[in-house]
Length: 202
Ligand code: IMP
Image (cartoon, rainbow, N blue to C red; front, side, top):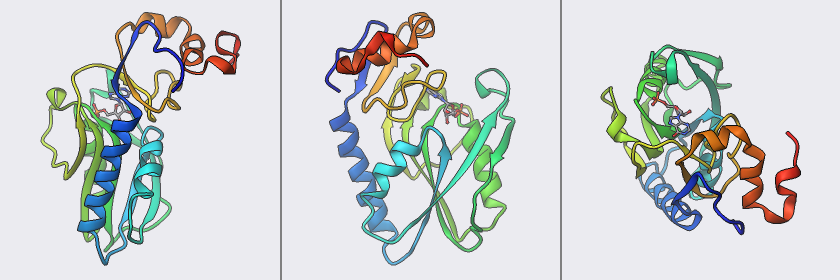
């Protein structure tokens, strides 16, 4: 990104470091799923950038499928999750890898794993890019993990605040959420100084 990191945000993981780690995860999956054709199940919308980059590092056949879920309760803390959009294919007897952007309390993923397990896949593993493990309140087995990150709200590389910021190529920690809420366009514009910045409308 050529612009300046605006006030209220702090660079946590830069694009080159993300790219390197995603390549390593791709190599791990390539090795472990050699001779098989796993289904990469991506959870909309946050994991889409990660999925797209990860899939390009898989040197084996694979399929991709998508699910959309929503959580209820403050910050999703109730653990009550609803499927908004289901997979298009049947995963019974298939090797499934859930490609997740971020695991926080773990409640969302725990629910999702139960739903997928009930469909009797041959195997079911998780590949999560960011892990806020200090916030975990349920036990989860994450076979492929990108980064352990601190307890801070993060945006970029697929992760949003109020649907904005997913298109940033690095991961940023939000240090001043009030500034972000007040004028989100100004912040995105700071990263793309030649693209209009503050005057964009949403
Ligand atoms: P969990 O159920 O508490 O593990 O929450 C997981 C979901 O919360 C993720 O899939 C994200 O959608 C969202 N989430 C958790 N932490 C963050 C964050 O720091 N930034 C953006 N989204 C987050």
